[in-house]
Image (cartoon, rainbow, N blue to C red):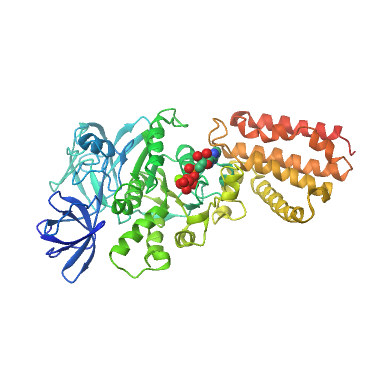
Length: 584
Ligand SMILES: Nc1ncnc2c1ncn2[C@@H]1O[C@H](COP(=O)(O)OP(=O)(O)OP(=O)(O)O)[C@@H](O)[C@H]1O
Ligand SMILES: [Mg+2]
């Protein structure tokens, strides 16, 4: 019987424990380990022994201590009260834990993710007599100023409504009674390792706007798509993921801080609650959930944290929201997997990672997507961006390689650019996106017809620069023709004035596509006109000395609403200036 199977500890090895006597226990079942009742999960059953990964510090466990099966898989609580929360990898709220124990590292303390006392104002969307299906919207709660929480009928459940209770209720109070007597509350649970069902998948055809020019213009991803962000130490992975959390076009943000240094997460925990939502002016946390498992917290809970994160994301997707999930860093998750695998004495694959690393990564990223939820109302999406931390910035290592095979886009950060303080340090020669063709129509229709042609022209300019740079390496800049040097200058303006973007500047931090397009138009106008002037014999020196680079390099600081006018004025100035320096 579930919950009744009692076993005892026969071995303790770091985060894993072996128990005997757990008759009938199932793989992935949650167990309580030892006298303190530490939370664990069954990860292997063999020859009457069950191997458990324990989500809490195992030091001090003694052989012979009891282990109890719960009959349940590892699951998270879903319902009003998630937004604004900071939880660990198994969804325990950090502040409640800290308040109870005075420390983040606690053992055997179960604290529910959702506040049992807090009352929410439930407004039903169904009437007695209605037939309900799993996933239907039973009602709504204005959870925060930023978001209406749609109360969903749990997937798999259906029935006819007998009675509805509107008004204030806790998450466990009954809000609906079905004709067969079953009751529904606002709280539901979902096993984290299982993807939540939906009606059908939609093809990704709208962009997930990030607010980063280099991404939105050159390497855009679709809403419901996936991108990986590999980069060596200090190349800006965390700053980029946090910038996305702040500025990307999403209704809900789920940010998974996975195995990074404690102090890095402390920055996030200190910074996020102070951030203003650029869309509403209210705190960003009102539409954010943070899942935090730093490097000093138990390794098994880190392994679980990405599943907890994506389950939360799917839940909001099922309310027909656009959800963005950031994971920083998937490498630390893979290291947790490796450590647990080693404890199991499994046959190691490349660099000690288990052979199923790629499969697991694939299963995780596959949970991203744009779907029609079970409710049939509109659409929802989960977009995933996962940071990868390859040791030494070497992308040939297993985690980067396995991630590359399943992701729709690569946003490659390089040490070279970071050292030159070119941020975001996204290398345009290595990065790619599989979504560009699908999204082209949206950009042309919604932003401007010249989108694709300007994008191409800009990419050609960068390509041309790369070729010329190789020659410069050989012969030196002085030996270059003026026609080539003006190309190098235009490419520099494109790199420094457009691709580069200051995450810490009020205006420049985020950029809408319309502004990106106007910037591109202006910079490329200079590129063409300056090249034409040289052709007509204008002296390079005069063009370089005309001071046009100043305003072109500062376009990013022009507020979006003034960009169109500022761009047009600059275009006129470019024409005047170039006419003056001669070459006619
Ligand atoms: N977009 C940006 N704009 C300005 N500065 C940036 C930007 N991105 C990164 N930086 C600078 O680079 C530093 C390192 O960035 P970050 O901490 O994000 O790197 P990381 O790749 O996460 O490093 P680690 O490998 O240690 O996790 C930042 O503290 C900041 O000074
Ligand atoms: Mg980092």
